[in-house]
Length: 360
Ligand SMILES: [Cu+2]
Image 1: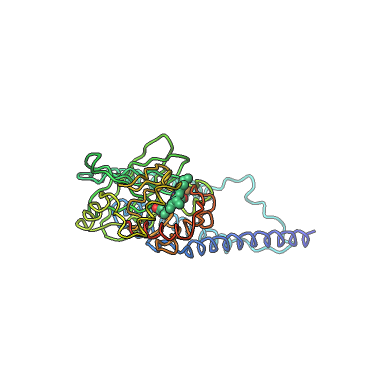
Image 2: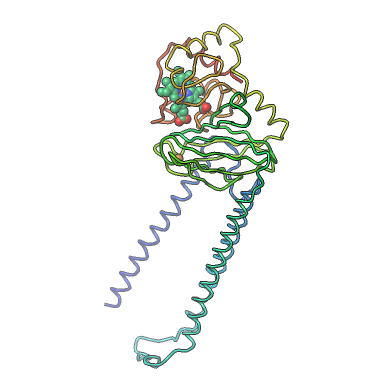
């Protein structure tokens, strides 16, 4: 019977180890898949804070990490100690009943002490969370850049609303912000719940249909930071990335000026034809290009498409080959996304790619 018990225990242990190994494997496979995603190769690291909001969160993370590590080590050390000190016995040793019906003041003291320490540590974690929350809310917002960010399945709209309506403009999937100036993002969603997460700059915030949330952040170092939708929102959730570019102030002003301008006029006959194709086919029903007849409201604004690094929320690099491939059949690269295949002749496609590629 004893041997049978031991046998069963071993089998159970084996199963358990298999499950653990499988989980470890899945973890690394997922990490590999993520790292192997070709685009965009921008920093995406919550432990590398590039602004005050992310820094507060890293500080809190460190406190949690060290407290939990200390508790874990203390528990393992305690366990090792009692295992080492346990009374040795052979199969024929009579049971030690000396502690039955006898108070154990030492054990009681130890347990009370451990409970008290746990409560204190948990309280300390709560207090540090509350302080972090307050620190996050205290970001000075003087002279803030206001951006309305709307999440869609599976891409982002960014509408810059500083100044009057004539000053505002829209872009998609790539947000520029000035270094050193606070940014207030008004977060909305127009279909399901999404979550905006740019780990180097700030924590996560949900975008909920019918509600408005605010995200306040500041980048103190110039750079391009990767963001990602962090709330499962459907089939292509994993391909709902975005880039936040923190520009030095002068560069940001220049970017803003160029984004406010209507789209460039086609420079040659090929681009001219491309514009005509865009305006006369289904493209114009969904997309808008400011300064043209295309005024659709259901898809990324393409007025300055060529100024972006990626296509389709970080799915493809923005170059003529990828652009042509995307337009030919967007469902190959992002199955289920809301852009249909629009049939057209190779000449029309070529002209369209030339035109869109000229929209700096
Ligand atoms: Cu999502």
